[in-house]
Length: 111
Length: 114
Image (cartoon, rainbow over all chains, first blue to last red; front, top):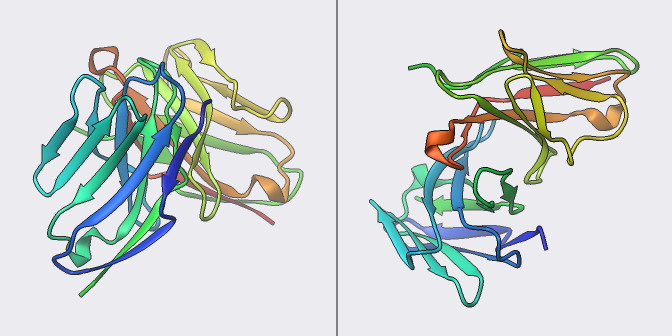
């Protein structure tokens, strides 16, 4: 119940394309859903986050779509760029509690 | 405004030695979390601390691992009698109550056990 399942494990997208990463959870107590971006040798950096009272949040080229009834959420990266190549982690947590991470998606954007 | 700081960035220990990892949270943050990341894996929660209190240590191995966050100074993750399986990247994150769950991560300490 504490798991967050993330797919795909790896993803290759052409420059300018849309990158889509999906996650699913089971614990209905989760009410905070962040996405983190991690470059090799660096710590994860918060990219964008959503709470379950909204179905979509957009920040620049990054959009989170959230489906509460299906317990699924996804990250869309529009106009993907080579600089977006990194590992992306979805995560979930109850309020003021530890974050449960997905296993990550290694994204590679072809120039 | 300095972010979360961790030191050392790289630490090499021989089996049986002790490893001490330090984390200084962002200014104004009183919550600290420690996570472990194995190669090609996600981050696994270890322990959640507030000043002078351990709030949740459900992810900590029962033996050899301990953590503290004293009133003054950084949070310390201590691993006694290290074994090769302890080799990993250890990340610290901090948050403030006013920002809810928003956690900011440090650059990590990469521990290698020879």
